[in-house]
Amino acid sequence: MPRQPTETPAPPPTPAPAAPATAHQMWGGRFSLGPSEALDALNRSLPVDHRLWPQDVAASKAWVHALGRVGVLTPSEEHQLLEGLDRVAERLADGAAVGAPDEDVHTLVERLLYAEVGTVAGKLHTGRSRNDQVATDLRLWTLGAIDQLDSDLAALGRALVARAEDGVDVLLPGYTHGQRAQPVRWAYVLLAHAWPLVRDRQRLADARRRVAELPLGSGALAGSGFAVDRVLLKEALGFRSVSANALDATGDRDFVAEVLFALTLVGTHLSRLAAEIVLYTSAEFGFVRLSDDFSTGSSLLPQKRNPDIFELVRAKSSRLLGDLVALLTTLKGLPAGYSKDLQEDKALLFDGFDTLALVLPAATGAVAVLSVDAERMRAALDASLRATDLADLLVEAGVPFRESHGLVGRLVREAERSGVPLDRVPGPVAAGIHPALAAALSQLGTWEDSVESRATPGGASRHSVAEQLEALRPAFAEGGGP
Ligand code: ARG
Image 1 (spheres, protein in one colour):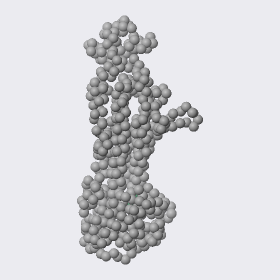
Image 2 (image 1 turned 30 degrees about the vertical axis):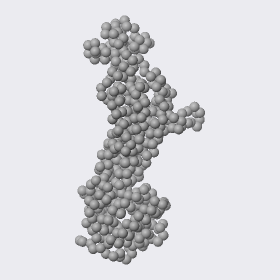
Image 3 (image 1 turned 135 degrees about the horizontal axis):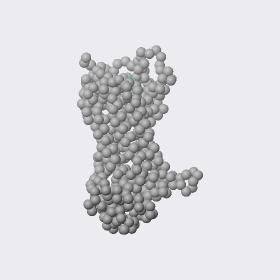
Image 4 (image 1 turned 120 degrees about the vertical axis):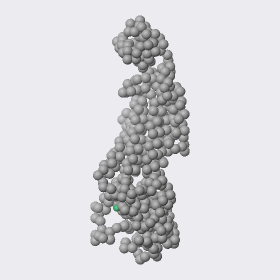
């Protein structure tokens, strides 16, 4: 049914509020009573979704253009609404949302618009539903939040790379199962925490493509009753594509789940970095020391230098996982289309991004000024870490590896029994285990040689670490994408 532009009609059933703080309602004509206080308290989302106001205004302005183009608004009405929305944005930037009584951000913007332009404000919501509106606002907000997170991740990546650059010559035990395993470079350990961030940024960039799908124009569930140009709307708002099914688009929160998963995995990566640093700051390890401005003290124990920062980084990952699980369990079992359950998505998504916005700058700052005790690291390299080198030397002498593993195992047992370091077992004793073992012991080079002997791409050798630094420097460069 074609709609003709009409002049501004008589005031809507809900009177335009004169006083800005009077609650405005978008519904209620069919009820004889307003919502109870208890319902209102449960139903209101403004305390959470007020931060969507810039997106709500931007999407509303695009909607005004779209309505103008199909003749629902006259050029003068279009102009009034656009100007009015700009003034609403100014008022919101000045804090008009603080303490506002409205149900949600959409109601708030509409009330303020009435206050600015009067009854013509009642035309803005033509052919639109809060169902497509909120999905559009939240997607827009998420696009911006992903970009900020991406830049925070790149900053941590740069800090890790910078610290790795001065840790190439610093050797320490590499651990598996929490046990000393083989010597590695400190740079190599740091880079093992940098590569996950590359994947995090790729994952976010990939999710971002699916976030950038426009729901506006879906109406409540079945499409808009007005033939708005969704492709132009998509372009005006910077989306990549237009959603294909309005029932799906209004009820789809896959993008929230996907992004929360990406955030949870970021948190998990940070918690692993944090766990390692907490361990290395202990007196038992003494490998690293947090600078004073990233350390905390104890109220009772004057000597304490606590790594609270990394303990909190570690703990915050649990909270992210909680957000993800809460969202997934909210979605599970919902029929297609919008249900009010979906209102709960925002608190979870905002919490996820807020958590990382707190954690990442702290972790980055602390990593950037972490001091490293290269002596302590080197002192932790005990001779048992040469066991693989010895087994490999036996292999070079023609002994099958399975056999050489067993022979070196016997040498380790002998060293432990006689209380000498592995590389000091007397030659004749070693030769008694296998003739090639004495020669292997005498061929053991320096710790540096040991690290260099594992020269496969991706290993801990100097060349491999240099290649990794080469790849990661541009990957985390300022202004560079993932
Ligand atoms: N505040 C709501 C939310 O965040 C907006 C959509 C409300 N839609 C509705 N049909 N009541 O989900």
